[in-house]
Length: 215
Image 1: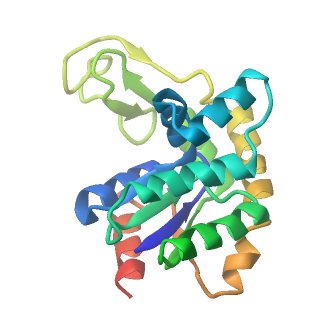
Image 2: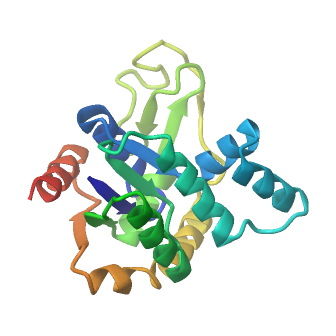
């Protein structure tokens, strides 16, 4: 099973991908993480990426596709893959077709977590975590049982991500729409796109994704 998981930041892609990894033994291929790992490991593609990044330039589609290919080569053929953050352009979508075909793999589903922008802003801007154990909380949906005290470790210190503000969230949404717009029609034409309500309860989102994968 090879799938692409789409959705703007805060839609819950990371949570759902983690559940698929735990429950189905799939592997999440996140291009940002893979790029850093390839550079650190000094792989052929990683060395190319390092030179480009040190020159202050954007990493090309060719390099990103090379890193995806290297990652797939390290996996057993029967291992399912979740593509996260790739492809982002029509050119990358074409490259992924070649990458998968060369390894006798096929793309099974493109799942988009749909969100309501205003509700997503409220979800993200209300997030905060325990500064000690990183337990997550929310101003509206999940306050500590005792005000100001972490339920897990008892710490009284909390933190918020500086980019969890309305302006940043709306900018991310605009960028997401711009980046996914070119690739969705490609996969819709093949009948691969399925949409799930990303604003639903986490358990219900998981069940909806499971139903798609089992269909």
